[in-house]
Image (cartoon, rainbow, N blue to C red; front, side, top):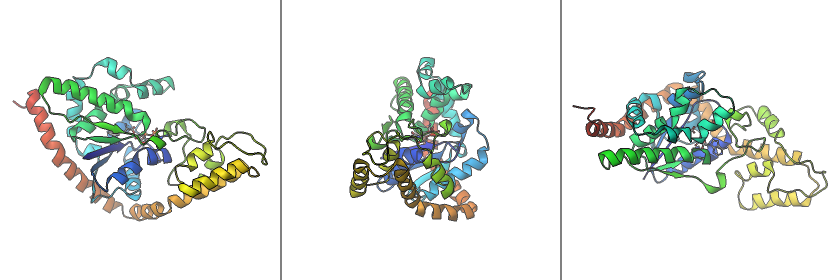
Length: 319
Ligand code: ADP
Ligand code: TRP
C-alpha cells in the first residue's frame, strides 16, 4: 500500500501538523510504502517568503520527527518537475466549479488573503502530486479531505477519457485528531497565529501555552474538561491512566487552569525531547540532509517517470 503526504514549508511546524499528518506518516513507515515530500511549489501560493530557508528547515524537522529515509521516499517537490507537467494536463480535466467550491480557497479569500491564480488552482497541483506517484492512502487533517476528493474527481474524469491510468487515492483521517485546536480554540493553523510549535525555546513555548483560552472558574470549583482547550490539547499526548488522572484533577477542583497549563507545557516539552536532540544533529549536518533529499528525489523520479510517460502517451503529448 502506498501512503503519501506532503507539507508546505511555510513556517514552523506545529502540533496540529504533527498529529494531523506527520505522526500518521511516521507510524505508516512500519508497514507501508511511504512517500513524503516538502511542497515548496505549493508554499508559493501564499507568499513563499524565505522559501529556500524554510524548505531546508522543514526537511530538517521532518527527519527529526521520524521520517526515515531508508523506509520512506523523502524529497523536495521541485526536484521532480514532472509534477508541473501533470498539473497542466490535469487542469484540462478540472471544471472551474470544482475549484470555486474549495473550502481552503473560500476561507483564505474570506480572511482577506488576496487571491492569485496559484491559490485558486492549488488543488490541481495537489492532485498532480498525489496521482503522479500512484498514491493509495493520503493521511491528512480534516481540512485537506476536500482536496483529496478533488484529486479523485479529476482522476475519474481523466480515466473516463483515457482508461485506467491514474490510481484512485483515499484520504485517511484519524478520528481523535481530526482537528487539533489552537490556543484560541479554533483550528490550529500557521495562518491564524494560534499555534503551539513543535520546536522552539522552552520559555516561548510556555508563554504561548499560558495564552490558551480557558473558562473563568474559581480555583476551588470543579472544572469541565471536555470543552477545555488545555485538556483537548493534553489528550493528544496522554494515554490511559495519565489521561484519567488529569480528568480527576479537573473534576476535583482546587487547581486552576494555570496549573493544567503548566502540566501541559511539561508534557509537550517531554514528548518532543528526543526529537529535539535529533533535530540538533541534523541542524549541524545540513549536508547530510541535502544528500538524503537528493537520494529521495532519485527514488521519487523512478516512480514518477513511468506514470508521466503513460500520461504523455495516452494524451498524445508524445507523438
Ligand atoms: P497550516 O494550517 O498551519 O498552514 P498546513 O495546511 O500546512 O497547516 O497543514 C499541513 C498538514 O497538517 C495537513 O495534512 C493538515 O491537514 C494538517 N493539519 C494542519 N493543521 C491541523 C490541525 N489543526 N489539526 C489537524 N491536522 C492539521
Ligand atoms: N495541501 C497540503 C497542505 O496544505 C500539502 C500538500 C500538498 C499535500 N500536496 C499534497 C498533502 C499531497 C497530501 C498530499 O497541508
